[in-house]
Image (cartoon, rainbow, N blue to C red; front, side, top):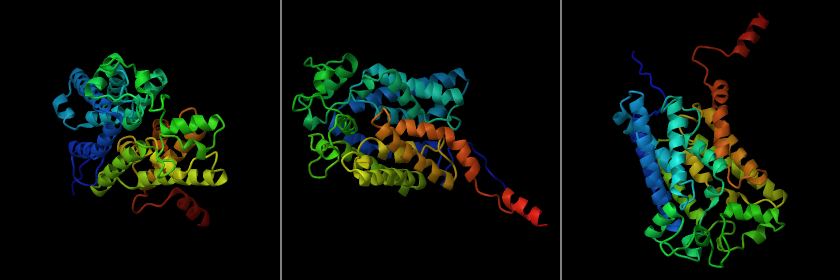
Length: 364
């Protein structure tokens, strides 16, 4: 009997890495389209800059390492990393932000550890945290949804704003951030976190224009974008590209934590629905935490890994310094993967556990 050994990422269905990555990219399309619809062409521009930077960086490093860069680039892992980072940053962030972040993700987090299959941390999330810590202003300049913006913007406005900081008509990024009421608008998570710190209740906060009046607590744009990524995530589950363990345990853990605390004090702690459909929890559960290289590799381990991420997300959202916490939670649990895998690896057939061996010896 012959066995074929391969490094991660591992797939039970016989697909090569390029096929898997292309399926994941395809599944991201609904979310990307909705993100572009609500926030403008900046999302597409950021993706374009990130993909070009990722491909050039990976090709250059592989050439320096005397590796076949043409074959490596066909696995599309660099393109997927670039897309995940690009959709995580503000659409009108300066061009150099996404270029620096993508270079860091490919060069430092991925290739420095040996390339695909050897990186300890999720490259996109490590780059996101680096950017957030290094350039907090640029990384928090999110625009209001197009239908709530005071100034409209088209593709040329987005292109010029990304490279110059001003739209074609001369509006600055600060002006583009203002809503229809002339007030600078923040994301739903930012809005709730800031309002609660100022003494407002949760029910008072969700009456603001950025929230949907039909379903309380859902952001006008973020809930639809989350739905788009949820559709893509379910497609990946159906195609058996990812397993159910991480997304289900991650979302369930966050839901339970939010439910318990909202039952304790609904004026101070947002509802479970708010936490699930605002921010990046959906894309995090299906596209980021399920990274086959940096996530746990056993079924029990995946459940623990996903649940721990969900708990970390809730803790940081409620009591941490950042409104959203997917990147931090994923990186924290990436460090714990070797330990989780060690204690959850399945017992080899025909072998007994150490505890049982000790017990049998004591009885004899």
